[in-house]
Length: 224
Image 1: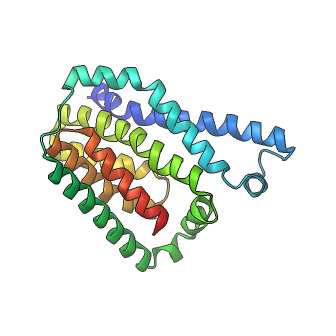
Image 2 (image 1 turned 90 degrees about the vertical axis):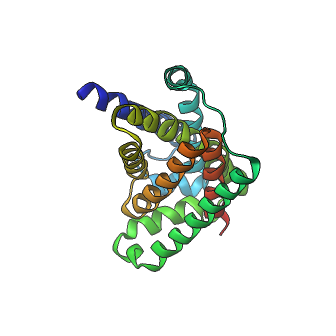
């Protein structure tokens, strides 16, 4: 049992290690270049507004590079899979997940939880407000979804499904996806999105479909 749990959570732990390593190195470089104390995160981001986005883009890229062989091994282990859906079904699923994500986000925004978890508002403002389009799209739309789908659906979900079945795998991978996002509001949002992404991946048989849906969800989150 312990070996199974380790097998499932290992990709997520590696993801976190990449985040920590890239953030530490990136912050150190920025601190040295700008002659600002590394602990003064606010001052660093005031000087380089897109610093969090550059860090995110960097660790997403690093994850995809370093986890490529493990992901390929999982493809051999569980099968490469091919899309079982027609183009119109893929398009419908992508649009449905994006619309559902937007609605769920609106529900959470209107729930008043932002007043309870005020750190989320500060964090969200820092991530999106006043950011240039290029680093924002690069991190959240182009690099983020493929990296996260590779880990949470392509590896965590498939491994968990092999051990405990589809339903438990969907729940576990979605909960871990929520935990990865780091705060309660995004946890609630990401768990629901994770369930939908896992479902369309399971039904379509293609990780490309869940990546496309994830990209669309993030694109709406950035511009709406």
